Length: 60
Image (cartoon, rainbow, N blue to C red):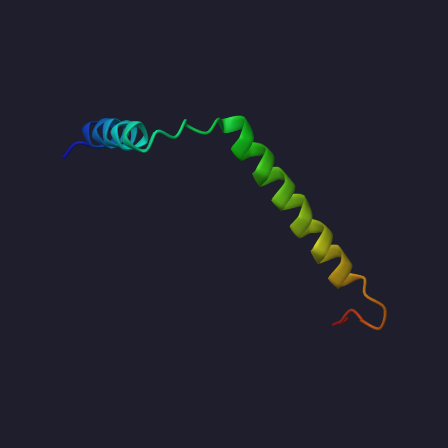
């Protein structure tokens, strides 16, 4: 099956399922905000782990 046809069928089926569920489609803005907050949280955790007292960076 051609990729464009497959993608169009996927979008059509997804729209049918959303309509059946009665759930509005999430906006890209909301997903982007969540992704950004999660990313910064992971950065903060990584920095805290890297700068914990008692940890020594290995020097080769």
